[in-house]
Amino acid sequence: MKELLRTTDPTIIAWASALLQGEGIETFEIDVHMSILDGSLGILPRRLMVMDRDLFIARAVLTDNEIPTGQ
Image 1 (spheres, rainbow, N blue to C red):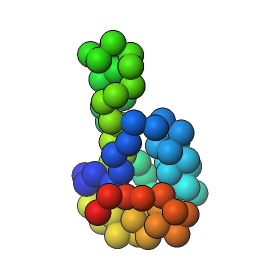
Image 2: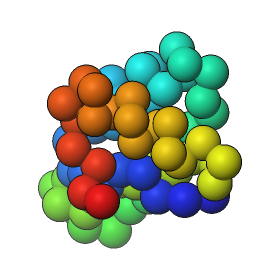
Image 3: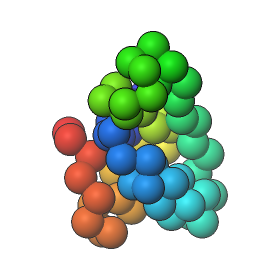
């Protein structure tokens, strides 16, 4: 798996996941429960992962929808 997106904003993760699932690209969110370690302040970023084979298309989908991927 490859990291596609890293953000502290859970709405961006949800939006990006919905867009990618609409294109048939499976996503996996990691670091979701890390907020327990920082006292639920939301300062630790969450990461959205995709399969290696889907990375190019997933970046294109997010770029088309003006979601920065931080390449």
